[in-house]
Image (cartoon, rainbow, N blue to C red; front, side, top):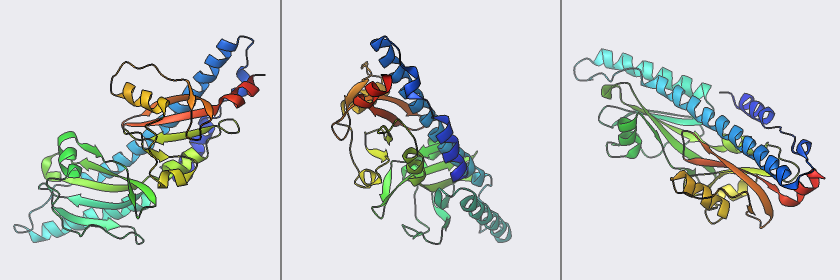
Length: 280
């Protein structure tokens, strides 16, 4: 999915007019505002999930060849490697969020890696990943979504691995730059001072309009709304919090939605003071 098209589609999809739902009944009015925020969160979550799914599909297209035995048929092996390199280079051209692609054979040994010119490949090529979750989890479940990490302590990344249709087709491992998610979140309009942000399954900030908060690896699990949402995600019977304090201590209306197929959560928040002013 192209970066501009993704951002443009999302920006248009969440343009709900908060001020248009004022009602004489204060309780009903507040309920409608929360509903609108939840719709915004759900829309963002669906779009992010679709974005990740599209990358997963594209990575899966590089796992359509079985690994040949070099010792038995060198010519066939070389032809297979040439096709795999071609598929990897095409993937990097078509999916800007992917900065690096590794291909592991049926035993978890890295046979090939393609990176963008500006990316330093790490660790060394040819490693043994037979006991690494990027291989074992992909083989067990066909896909693996790794935890968020920070490359060069700047931009957030995640590892996404996809296994081939059979064991001998191996596993393709993509390193995905999540700055694309930040680009989307930063352009969402929620009133004048509202915010959308994304946390992972531990409450760690993944995307926020203030990128410095993400780069500082900010933990939001202490916020009551995040605590409650994380608890509900694990099946605990917890009430959904609709009004709380945000990271800056402002009183906000808040709603969230889970990002499928990940364990991430999208929060959309609007200052209570602004919500009240919009309703007048």
